[in-house]
Image (cartoon, rainbow over all chains, first blue to last red):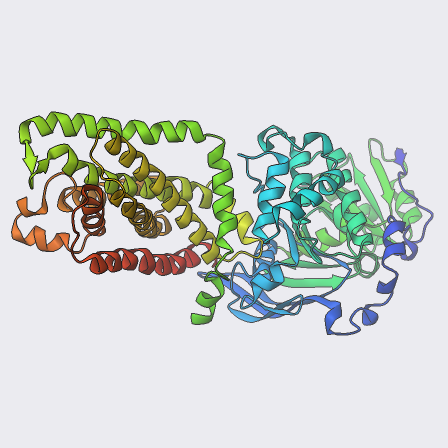
Length: 343
Length: 262
């Protein structure tokens, strides 16, 4: 039997190693949920019982959440869960059928324009103008915010620097790589110096290097006090960036909380992934020694507060590969939206 | 319902300029080709139709046929230019290129964007109409300085046709539908509005119908200006064009709101 112990197995699940110390430093005010909202002006986005249907299909169902100024709030859910519709509702690009939306103190969609003047958006799909260079895109986009050419020409170099595109200023967008385009979109979203950023799957389709660069840029924005609404289905992204998150499926909120609190609540123990054998047969062997077991494809996920017990049971079985690790958001996500939720 | 409509109307009188400038910036990159195209088109129609047909027809209403045709072609080129800009280029910016989508994420409203697009299409119509007029003037068929009165009319004509085409853009599922607008609306209008022959040649019922057509009103204003003749019912013609510019605009805002913001 081959034993793979990749992560810090000795750490107890309730004290999961902090993956993002930077976030803690910058968001000290978020130490307790009840201290988040000191006054009305501390609320960046508030959705109250919002519903939205297209024909017979309910896309958003009685959804409520509140995002405090300066926090990074993750909206997680499988494809088609209604995440992008929530972004559209918040921007006033679609009216809700029911419920109320307030963004930066403005009622949406009635006064969405005034809210949008203080919002930066990174849409899910690339909307850069392919007829223009990087610099021209920033200029055109800045003018949409009513900014003067002179102001923009002064601001553009620092935005290009922020996006690490200084050397690409006069390159047509069509010639930029996927990661560069995404960073340029982020720079465009910052042209009006927004208080709030709405990022719809900002790193989908990027290679790991490009993704890490975006994450690093987003953390520096959080450090500057920006509020972020992040829509994603990358659990690692949510874990790295989000102070709080909300998992939705079929437009309904399933759970909301801080990433680590959710991991403790929903999983609360180490995970052993077992592969290389017949998972159905293995269930009967390890099942009694685990709090919960789940099969996904050819892998058996074993949630055990005493992982040693599980390993003892498997001793002597050949061809098995074991990976013991602390629980993560993906476990939470799969538990909430995965097999157990399917009917 | 009314509240939702009010929220997408132009936010102020100047927001649309940013959209116009975006289109101007993109156009500048291919300006020479565009201007050459605008000059080549009138030459073919004026020289081809004017002199070919003119030799057979002789004069119309006491003036050479080319002089008669020139004013019709100025208005027609404004119509065609504004229409094509709106149903092709604007549709692409709304649909495939996602230009509107990014603009809608800013403080612009849908109405601001539409107004900017219409103003841009009217600008291109002014360019096309002016090019046609320059060619006519070069061969001596435009009177100076009365021809200058035609310039605002060309721009207004462009705006009216862009506004009408915006409704088609709002309703068309794809490019294929634009052909109906061209063949069922624009082409008949060309022959019913007195562009290539006088309206008086038409059966009475069509003469009545021509009073409703925006191109007819445009020609009624441009022709006297180019020929330095006294024009009649100037107020009526301008009002008619203004109605065609304004009413479809407000209608298209609602149609596009339903299409894009639901």
